[in-house]
Amino acid sequence: MEFKEKKKRTPNIPTASMGDIAFLIIIFFMTSTVFTREKGIKMLLPERTESEVKVKPENIVSILINPEGALRLKASGYDGYEISPDKYSEVKRIVEEKLLERDTLLVVSLKTSRDAPYKAMVSVLDQIKLCRVTTSDGRELRANKISLVPTSEE
Amino acid sequence: MKKSIIRRYTQTPEIPTASTADVAFLLILFFMVTTVFRATTLHLKINLPKAKSTERILIRRNITHLWIDNNAKVYIDDNLVPKEKVATRILPKIAENPELVTILNIHEDIDYGTVDVVLDQLKEARAFKITFATEFGG
Image (cartoon, rainbow over all chains, first blue to last red; front, side, top):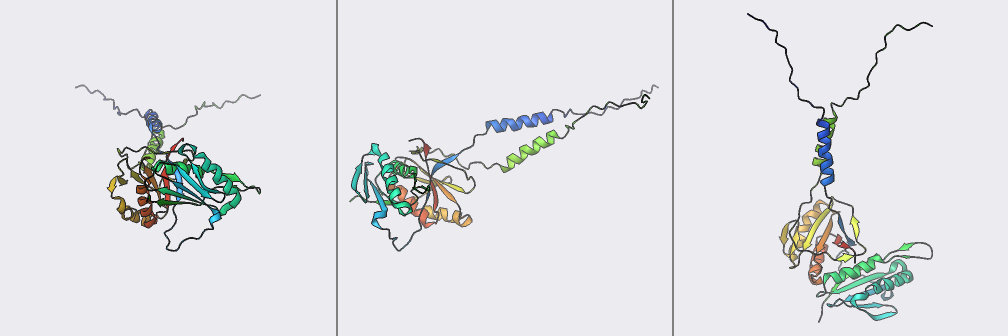
């Protein structure tokens, strides 16, 4: 009988490239991931109050939006100033002017007709949000007090 | 000078690479577990209005979405909600997280009346932090 010494071979799986594979997967997922970025205009809604908030009329800029998207602006010095839909940048000019005059007391009241398109309201809100003025003592002012009011056509 | 008789071993320096795979898979698992998927991709026809003052919203956790599509139908997180019942849907979310920001994705041609009803509902639910979703440009 022949006794052959059997060589014991330990089977092994090459693991040297495992790391490469894993990092390849990481890089694949990193490059193929698309992040959804939320973007928009931030607003803070006021609390519902029973009592009316009293604001001096000279501190208010009120902007009415009619169903056609045309504006009527009321403020001290601008009584019933009309702005056509293609001249919304006028809003920015006037609000900035009032902002310099009234400082932080300024309230912008955006009165939108219930039949007006939402995009008209957003365009005007956009103009108000773009307002930025620097006072003589170096503070940067923005129109922070914005109230959204609906109006009904009679 | 005496010559050293001690035999010097030339050592090849080695970095152990056996565990790189473990590290890499650990990273994969970590990112898999921490990833939060956006809950919804609704097939709604919504053209967001364009605005120059559009800001990036950096917070990702404390947000909830509300959609109003071109037929003035209101959706909150995948569900169709009657616009007068928005408050009842938002209220439990606010109770859970008072810092919640509601992102309003509203079709640009919707009447403001519909938007106002929803805003009023949000006030009722004390969801004061809102964002009007817009696109860059204008």
